[in-house]
Every structure is written in structure tokens, then in C-alpha cells.
Image (cartoon, rainbow, N blue to C red; front, side, top):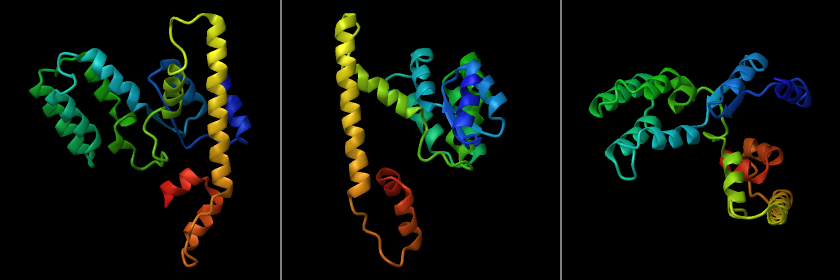
Length: 202
């Protein structure tokens, strides 16, 4: 709770419109208390990871269930359609009594994209930046290195991150964005957004 209150102060009293987290119960309680009007969405990456752990009998590399569940989550554009497809999947695979899937279905509004189309998430579905950082550091450190080596490798990784960020900042500041004179909205957003976000908007 303290962290989120500090965050609000740092943001000039403005809570976030949306927030993406894993299924941590303490964090969920804190978000509900401090950000009552913020749309809280669960990270799809964490949920998909649990599919592998909890449903290994049906959710393996080339299983029909894996393909069908992916389609059900990502390719449904109406809530009724998702619910109908989900229930069919459960029956076809004998998973109607699976407690974990039942709980997941009960909180579907917090992780299935079709329930969150009314909120702008800037193209994010996962706690992607943190997962990206984790995988980035994984390429530098292993479980077998000692503390001294860890510090050296960690420092190298941080230097690479800083270099990438400064390269991106330079490109955003100095790389010319071609926008036609009659495209007023694009012209305006080119001054507001960094390069990557501008390209998404464009």
C-alpha cells in the first residue's frame, strides 16, 4: 500500500488508468484500496505459464487443446462468444471439474482481452518489461556463478541497458519523422510521443 501511495504522490496525485500485474493477492488488495478506479488486468504471460504447469496432460507443444485455447483467448470479439467457446473446450477435454480453470474462468474479466477492449493498454498484455528484463539478465548470469562474478556480470548487463536506452533516446530526439503537412493529428503526436510509441500510433 505504501509503495502505491508513494507512486500516486510521485505522479502528482494522478492514479494510473490501468495496471497489469501477476496474480499476487496482496498486490491485488493494495491496488483495490489505493487505485479503486484503475482497471487492473492480470498478466497473460503468467497465466499461460500456469497452463503448462497445471494442464500438462492436455497443454503440450502441438496439442489441439493448446491451439484451441489460444484461439479462444485471442480470437473472440464478443464476451458471449468467448464464454461459449470456453465451455465447449472444457467439455471436449474433460476439464469441467478442474478447480484451477474454474477459478480462472470466474476472474475472466481481468485477463481475457475481449473484456478489456474499453480500456487503452498501449498494446500491452503482459508485465512485459519486467519479463523482458528478467530474460535479458538470464543471458548474463547463471545459477552456477559465484557472488563476485554475479556483480561483474550484473554491471555488464546494466551498462548494455544504459547504452541501448541512450541510443534510443538519441534516435527519438534526432531522427526526423516524415509527416505530411495536412496530417495535423500525426504532426501533433510526433511532438508528444517518443519514436516507438509514435510508430505504434501511426
